[in-house]
Image 1 (cartoon, rainbow, N blue to C red):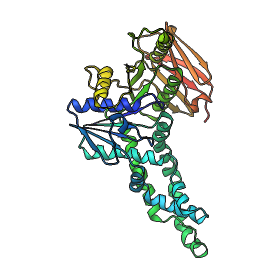
Image 2 (image 1 turned 30 degrees about the vertical axis):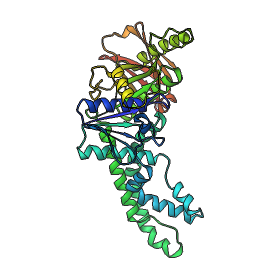
Image 3 (image 1 turned 120 degrees about the horizontal axis):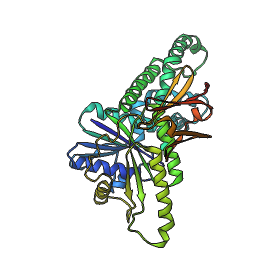
Image 4 (image 1 turned 180 degrees about the horizontal axis):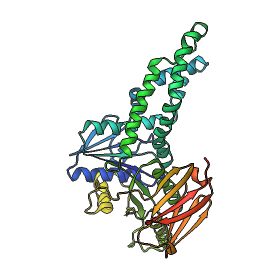
Length: 389
């Protein structure tokens, strides 16, 4: 079983890359399902067909699905949603508006991610590919189980006990919809599902995230931050796909400056994500839609490589908290201490190793903290941050 998550800044072409990967996996004989967890579905557009909440057979060994938000809410969120809706209606909100407001931001997309666990447990597929929401939303979704874990361990037992004590005392005096055991049990079950999903997606032997970028500064900076956050949350990145690279054969004067800028930006991508493999994809003459063009895209990305393989094993960047201090560890094999220099510029670390440079963008938690020291030992650079946060 292999699970691959594709994400990237909106508009970089991650849906096309995900669809092309799925098509190639199916043609290699793997039973493959590709699903969109993005509220703004475009997976069906990539295949040039209409998709629904039910998996649709697209080709031999290939199924595709666009998760229907109302169905996922009904499956994973209905009991909690009904109570929240009743509470908002009790406060005077119109019922139809209360129903809409009772859906917490991101819960629709998060519930869609649970399809991954469902298909994994079903065992009917060899490869599961998810076309994720744009990077910002993806990170919020992937971090949610960690936040919920803290709430379930520390606050949930207190809230459940308090509700059980107060419910019989308050009920005779007010008609406020107090959460009953079914609501708390639904929250507990939802947490269990999300926690299993987190464990599954953070298992590097099964799952990996792939970043889709364009050789453009704004896209690269967001991808750099995303990569750092993925490491922080314990999700493994095994591949970067650089899409829409202007081919060398294009020699029109209009594109010369653009090609030069792309060349410089591609070098930045190599600096930022090494040693993770980077696979370039040329800019196509037309919009990539339909099986023929998707097949061509897969050929340009992977060549003879198996798209389902793990392209990079190991964590290229680790962030841990020890004794109140955060430490970022970066493996730098085959160099000595005198080869390394380190500069901090706001939320960016610039690491020089000989003639090579690497840019590391810090997550918000670390960007607020000053660096205290850096050590190089056993082939690893360890950067320590002041206590706080």
